[in-house]
Length: 446
Image (cartoon, rainbow, N blue to C red):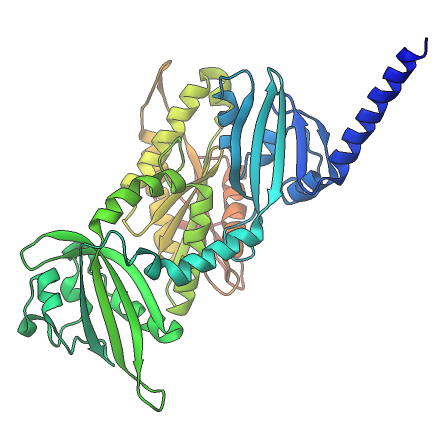
């Protein structure tokens, strides 16, 4: 007659053991229903997610992660099996991608029709180590694979070619008299000749001892190829720089194979623009570049006005078409050197190198008008949409990427408060002047 009590005690012991495992586990564990509503979470998971909730509670795990990993909800929704792993070690950049970024590895398991288990692991140190390894080993890692040809030559201290050998002609088609005394731009494709590129090559090489960059090149006969250039410092016995050694490689074949993979890893699945994680990697580099060379840099944050209303009245597919059209209009307006990225939801960001605040205002206003005038084709018919935009530029008050994002976000908030479908610009000056763009496109103080 004691068996039932024994069974009950065994179940209670197992439950207590499960709770102990949950709370003492070295990884974050979250249990939720298929819609993401949480019913159990261990302390480590709450700690790892704290930067996202800013003191608030975590009720829906997908909502909490929407700003950094909006794709997780779609991954779960598109997983058709009754049970099994939805994703394994999917990387989530909780804070911007840089050396001290917070990065989580997220694995989701569908236990049954309505129960999900999410495992979160802090892999920030691993990601930082991988980034450093890529920076220092990228040249060596690819030198034995995907190489069609290479050329070796040297530059003098001013950056002019001062030596030649047959490998140069074999790769580029140019003879000795056609390259000696010229700059590296001799080998660039015409659309890659940017005035600041060569000085930056040399400056970065002087700072670090070596520098690697990739861009389109063109042979004497007009054949385009994807070139990778490694520049390293040559020094005299007293340590003074006497010149530079250069290895130019044709890595076109490798680029063709890597582009597809890179596109998957760096682009937003819905709109095709740069994704959040890759944007932060690019933006950190652009901020450092602008500061090093004292160049302007501006950032525009924007989002779709009344987007929830569009989803609620026309459906999520129509909302997706609106986001795709906004991204398309932005890409059509921007230069090759500019970046448009989706930060999450209906929020986008434009990164505009060598662009002042006033110039960025013009770009933002053109985009606002283009979106306002667009007729967006959806399954429920044509829609119209508008956007609000906030502009910020690098300066004394905005010295870091985080400063820029915060200033642009504040300007975007001002645009929303002003009635939406407008542009606001926060200028980092002592007077803290805020500017807006009138309907005629003129910059006016507010």
